[in-house]
Amino acid sequence: MPRILLVEDDDSVRISLAKALGRYGHEVDAAPTGEQGLRMYRERAPELVVLDLMLPEIDGFEVCRRVRAAGNVPVIMLTARGDDTDIVGGLEAGADDYVVKPVEPRVMDARIKAVLRRGTPAPTEQPSTASFRDLIIDRASMTVTKAGREVALTPTELRLLLELSESPGRVLTRQQLLESVWDHSYLGDSRLVDNGVQRLRAKIETDTTAPVFIQTVRGFGYRFGPV
Image (cartoon, rainbow, N blue to C red; front, side):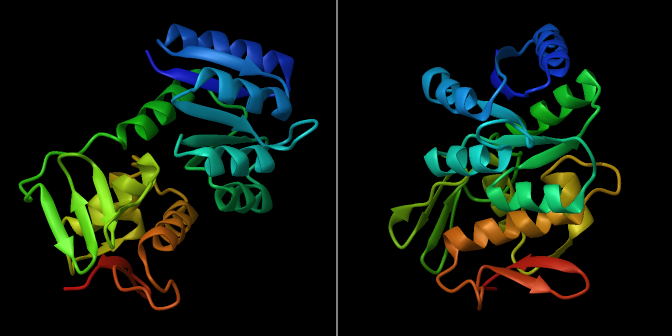
């Protein structure tokens, strides 16, 4: 049973969503403020955080940054509107996905399950270990090392790297990546992909201004190199 931390200051939303997610089989801890959310995060060690952005005391952006700095637990942010500033700010703070309120519990359950699945390797005929210069990807153990040091990746970052590296040299569109990594079967938000690539590059590239492993194909998407 996945342990979820829900941080939401609206009492009615927090209580109803926590109960609904419980019916879907999640174990939910709920906090009304950012400060309490961070305390529960340290005490309860959740597998995923659902985080409202507009919180008292410490806002959701700062909570997300602190959660991300502490480890690789995935974060789904809740935003009251499809505001570009909120969405971009949340993604830049380290969120893996976002849902615009009001959200139906079944939709939130689907987003949670999709994020948690990213830590599970997809079936592949690829060798379990592949080396690309000083980057080693072990699909069996789900570990990545760079210059001999293990790289700490979130489930989303790991899934993105596995997807891109499965066929080096092949160009994948943002929509293809949204479907295979984020499980968005509809025309989703390409900012999820671009932000995910940016965060992944920061961890595996020696020089993010001249990326070697994740190359942008302008007007199309991304490909994995070197080839």
